[in-house]
Image (tube, rainbow, N blue to C red; front, side, top):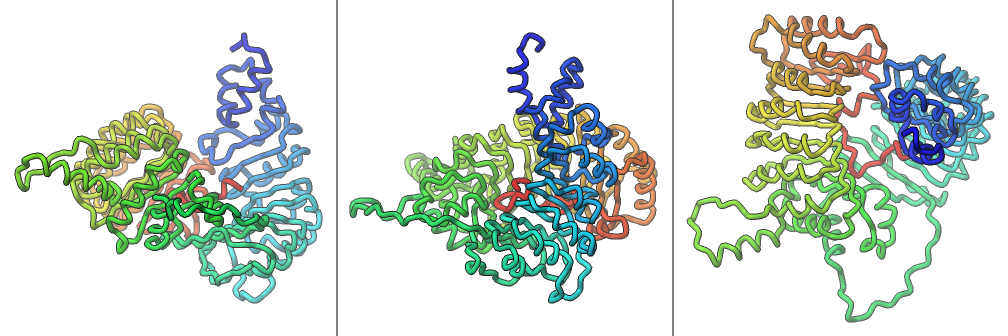
Length: 595
């Protein structure tokens, strides 16, 4: 390392994220002067780095790094840093142009807003109480702001027709050309997006995700075309409106000898007719506004989670044609129901043809030499996130055997599974060995003791697992906590367990079981436990144990409840952990991290 010239080291280190860079400099302290090199620290990203809770980030940036060189700061979801520390840090970042601080203690109060005067891009969480008269006046200093992303975490205004402080605030930032709004509340008060579009005459892009029911918007009067419209099972409505430059229509005259439709176009027509949601993400949706683009598009997101009533061979065959095409070489996120594990129509026909020429005993199941899904699993070499949901109409042995193919996705980092009754979990060993999973979410649709046993047996091979979620009706708490305690690297950051009934081999040792788990995982920052049928004594014993290991650190959130809704009570869980509590999909939806 010492023999490399600084120019090469700078070129290498600037590709590291901030947390890895800090760890590198801690391992090689003689090289920590690179923390004051502009091209290495110009973009400083701590987003969702929960493992940094023991580090005073504001002090580290102020002392170890050169704050005057930082132009982009991302501290999304670092909810424990005190407001005053963040404000003092912003005062030192004199050249800061972009700030991402969603789900932090910063907001749009007057004391915060005055620190944003030089920003071109801002992402922040807000409450309607932030917008007092002083904040509205301070909005006049945001003359450089061009892009704004706000996450609305509280609305107390009851009358939807009233002009809120947020309306007045936005009316004074007329130079905005991009606005992202995440309305993360269940309030009946609807945000008046139409008023904002009228006020912001320079707006070129409007992105909306809302948990409240919205009217059908048409913003063509302002030149904004709808390029993405999605309503998923988590009740969020997602919309993207954008000004699209005029493109000349294609003047190419097709030959009468050209095929009328390609296989890809036929498959896409099936999805549009049978799928209630848009099968792709926002990027693909924008390109698909031009019909000629379908055959040349490279998909990054594909959503094949259909409604149960649409489960049929035509749908599965269309999905196979798309996944086997060259258009999916760059696919990164994918979800589907287990119907795809049964194989396409072509595969079934080949199986039938194979049986015609060979004698076979009627009623005896013979394994296929190659599973129909195997070819796809080896083609998708860039898949990072995979979600597989159960289909009650597809329960053949082919479905069960296909789970072993997950190990072929070696680039996989996030895995969400609904576990059918007959799946024993033995496939997890090779999945943990070949895929460096960082996030694992499991939902058992029925009690499945063999699966839980194999899961606990193989968790010790999950060397990269940081976030773990499991949901089941009946669960052996001792087994699951013992399995998580055997993980060798001690990097588990978040655990969420939800069940109706948790049983213990020895009820007298409930506190000992949780104490042992927390002793083995001192780095754990979030532990959520839902036991809907727990006794009052069990809840009390577990709470006392969790409180002992919390150590008073504001970042550590340990909760045990009977219902998920109780997490929003007097002491709500920070929104930074809502993703693991509510298990919201990340496939073919708006990714606010891309703002």
